[in-house]
Amino acid sequence: MNKTAAAVTLAAATAAVLLQPTATTAATAPASGPRLGACAAGQLCLWPKTGFHGPRQARELADTDIASCEPLRPGTSAASLANRTGRPVTTYQSPECAESAEFSTYPHGAYTPESPYRVRAFKIWEN
Image 1 (tube, helix red, strand yellow):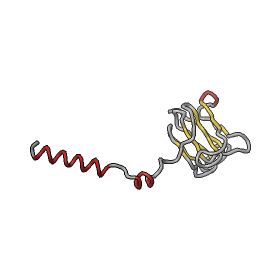
Image 2 (cartoon, helix red, strand yellow):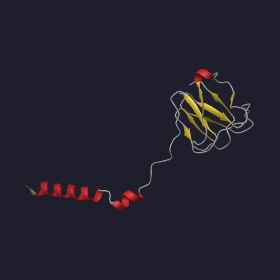
Image 3 (cartoon, rainbow, N blue to C red):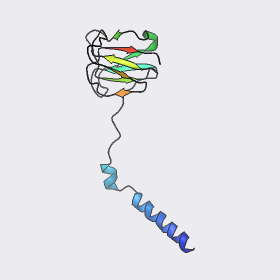
Image 4 (cartoon, one colour):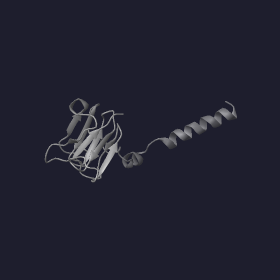
């Protein structure tokens, strides 16, 4: 074996030893990020509690009119949401979709574990 091959072999062996997780690093490694709420493709899912907790409300395009105000069931609101509709969705603090209260638009694929306000209505938009 020539000197170059020996140096490469030694470097590879050293890297393999140094990069092996130890019991200490494995125990202190951070867990994966927050668990996302279950929400099927084509749905807007809303949960009453932050972190995707509580009974989930799921709405689909087939059940909603595009760009119309869709209030949540009376007496309910949402604190977290997942937009899997394939379209942008605007959520509203007001049950009438009034823009004088808080509102935010979320792109398709957005998972929001904590809305900045209680969501009481939404609109699904064309692309």
